[in-house]
Image (cartoon, rainbow, N blue to C red; front, top):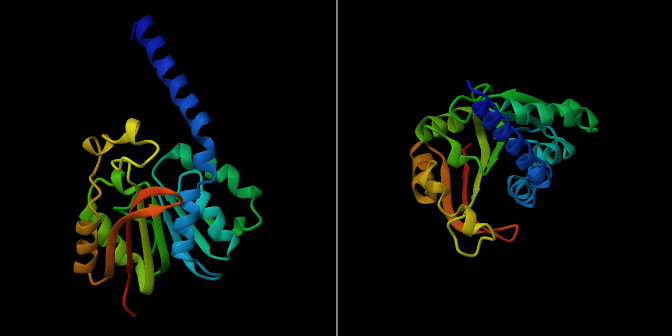
Length: 209
């Protein structure tokens, strides 16, 4: 690799680090994550799974409520940040940081009482495999909250810069996802609504007892 190529790679790495620094408030504590957690309503003693947990804004809050949280993320960077954050939490013993993806969750069959994900569905590569996993790990009576911000909606504050992201990622169709989960025996609904003041795509589901 030539000098110019090395400089280009170094500049790309610096830009990536700066990007995370500018975005850290959003990833560290998120209003959307907080609202999803209110919908999921994890309680003391429940086993919760946070898919695409990132830096753990929802994981930390769920653990404070007394839930045992498995925070799943495929990014080593995000897992490292959450692992650094974890020891500073009073509820740290209830947080497990795990490598994994929605298509292959590192938890046992029927062991999860509540599961959620925020702004991660559009990263899932194989939706059908992910849905099979959600149905596999959920315990009878368990519940799911899946939410992606709707950047295609003109009312979203980031619409101008993010509206075309679906052309490069997995399309999040709430009706299709709800129908797929229903086909797996869950009671599911999907809607485009508003949460934490922004347009979102929301899917909720429960597993019959």
